[in-house]
Image (tube, rainbow, N blue to C red; front, side, top):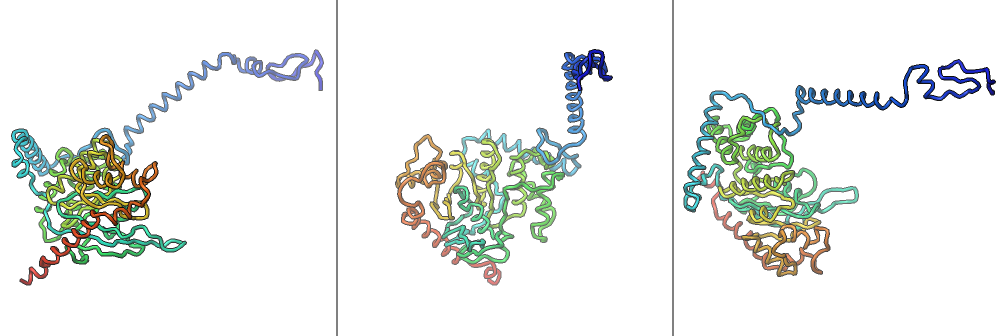
Length: 430
């Protein structure tokens, strides 16, 4: 196996008396490649690969747009003559309102009278008592809600809050009659009367996920909802006029012809609310975490729109997760749940959250002035990373509190006032 001094391999780079051929010698003799120079060749190849990849990516993004993603620019559809006239009217009213507001910014009477009711104001109150919800599981029925009660009055904005897994969305779905499995017990009433078969017709539900036809414009999406969901007795002209009012109410005048797929998250949320409002909900508007996925400024703008809707008479009930103190104070009333679907608090929030601060402070959970009250109360009931404040369960504290008795009495008064009103059938007979 050993080569003699006069013997050599027949391969490139072989040397006499050795049966081992170094790789460097093989490449040098056979292919004239200097291994010390390989990095220069490889560097040029890498530069070429990078340039080719960048050029391919630019061409793909230019000629194959991904409609499912948000754009930094908005794409508008071509305007027809009718659309041009409507957009011009919207912009003219917008400029007029802006000028009038600047002239009368200190006139409270003017500000009140200028809140034109684009949303129909109804006087029906929505109440629920002893609401329980059980779902079947392999190990037996599981309770998700336990003796929840509350109410929503016209013209109020009510928040539904709680820890993760407390049943916020479940409670919202049960109240909106969107659950088709499990057993729901308790009283869900409108003006003290059981729900009619047309309850869903009088409500609107804005889901957390914004599901729209991406190639439609903002105006087309709202009109489509109005055409299909409003009664057939309403003319097309009235439906179109109502859509224009909703566009103005939600401050979408500059986005009427924007394609849905090019809208940002905040505009999509507003469009989702507008699509539901286009159906003219007579009773209640449900929203499932409308501020999710929004930054602080966008969340504030969205809650400002909800506040505007409530001030015009719309009853709104929405779940909300981790609101800032400014957003929290925009709500009129709060329903707070803890794990197991137990009610911890239901009542007014008050200016600067004074009422709910006093309630928790009276029961041992004092909220410092520089702390967000929404986060503080969640931590106090044990929904945060810190242990629960106090030895008693907060649901037991709530059941023994005067606020609980006051809320129950208010529900009874709402039911009595509602039963005293004549029904629509009785009014027609009279």
